[in-house]
Image (cartoon, rainbow, N blue to C red; front, side, top):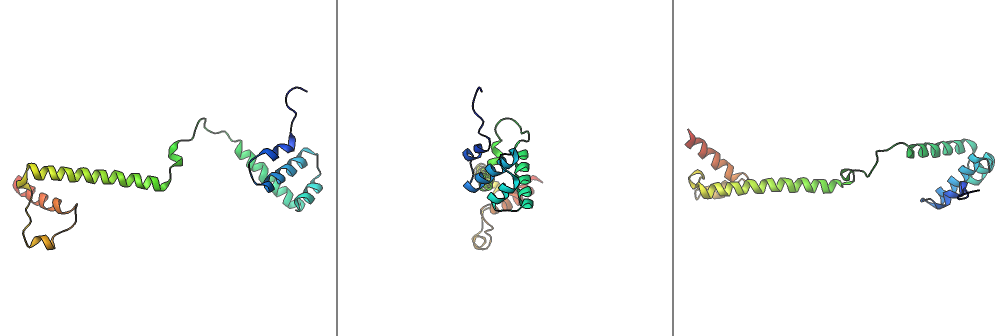
Amino acid sequence: MRGRHPKGSRSARDMEGSAVARERLEILLQAMTGSMTVADACAELGIGEAAYHKLRQRMLEGALAGLEPQTPGRRPLDADIDPRVEALEDEVRQLRIELRMSQVREEIALLMPHLVKAPEPGEKKTASPGPSGGGKKGTQGRSGGSAS
């Protein structure tokens, strides 16, 4: 005989998985190849014939699913991205947009101070809607009035 000698059911010993799963696979392969009877396999596994046939069917379905054709090459990286990483990237994108908007508002305030409404002394305490809302209100009201 040329080449390697076939390992047969012993090849299950070299596979990844728990010791129990490897032992079950080896017994199932022995029964399927005829080197062990189904009754002996059931006795080794400690199950009845109906459970044996269900287990064999599950094994064959798993093997068949593993042999389905797949697209060649590596999987796209997007499939492996953690949802938390994706959420953080979205947040960074949004923060960059907000930063740019803030920079543009600042440039407008410096270059065209007549468009920005100066806060009155009493207004400071009551009208502070937040960092993104304050500049918009005054700018819209003023630019709408001077454009007419």
